[in-house]
Image (tube, rainbow over all chains, first blue to last red; front, side, top):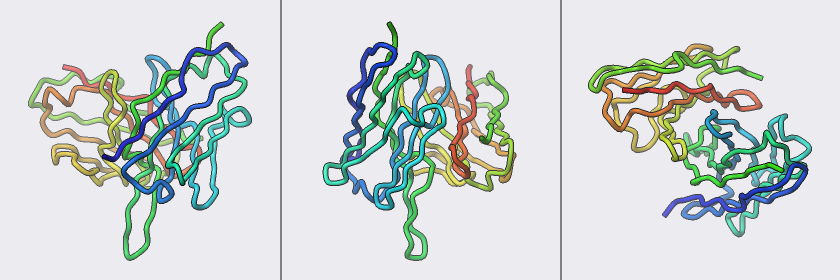
Length: 127
Length: 106
């Protein structure tokens, strides 16, 4: 079965740290871009970070740059998000999401439309 | 950053009626636009990518159109399972950004 399963969320004090994990199954991890997307309670979606492990390409939203670190382990089909210096405004459900992949004329691409999502893990930052 | 603006914020529709949702980008995103559906307590589901291509398993009643800065998601005949929040998202420029969502309610 093709799926993503997040873990690692919880309650943390401002300034604290958490490490989120996302276990992927049913597809070859390295062939896709992988992302973290978050959703604050009652709010919309916010893209957080991107990694394409095959090209060592990483991007971050300005709101988390310098505090969060995305990484992956292709051998274990796992995605991670190390979150440091957490703030109240980081409180959200964090989803890992796969960028859609397709092939055309013998070339394969992975784009920024997210065709697979995990169930999400809740991060609450509060004193 | 590219700002994605969705309208209306809430759309009240009767079952069987057609729903038209709009998404405007603050600058051109070409056709690099996706639409998602999200129901309460669930992760979003990809409906449309490349502005008009239905994702795998998405019924023909969902259609997307537009390019550049103006995009539309049309649901041809609202079914009970279609009442949800819909988001557009651009993936043409970093950072990738979402609209604030349109809630489709009965």
